[in-house]
Length: 60
Picture 1 (spheres, rainbow, N blue to C red):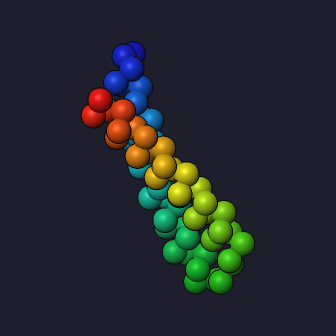
Picture 2: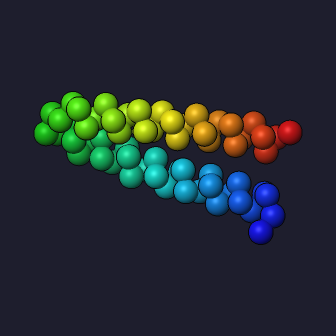
């Protein structure tokens, strides 16, 4: 597998994970579980950071 294929798979995984996290945040906010929301939001922020790095590297 080439580097670009690997990066593409990582990007797809992060994007799918982000969807799951966003849905979890939305559901947990209905139950006012702020501790879980903080964890999910931190996880989401980490994934966005990783996606930004992947996008920058793919342009170079």
